[in-house]
Image 1 (cartoon, rainbow, N blue to C red):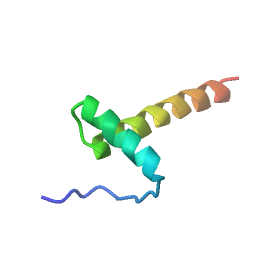
Image 2 (image 1 turned 180 degrees about the vertical axis):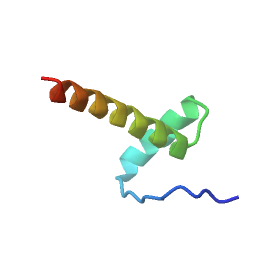
Image 3 (image 1 turned 180 degrees about the horizontal axis):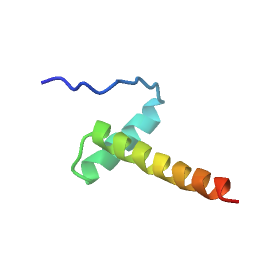
Image 4 (image 1 turned 120 degrees about the horizontal axis):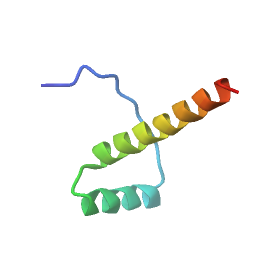
Length: 56
């Protein structure tokens, strides 16, 4: 069943894609799952930084 979540498209260098594929394979996950985890981690850091900046 297709996901109802919004989609995004990115364009990356072949070298970066190869790196992501190797990394995902080492962690026994898909590239999509790895990239989603990286994005969520980055969002978490940014939210924490924004929260800290707003509290000053």
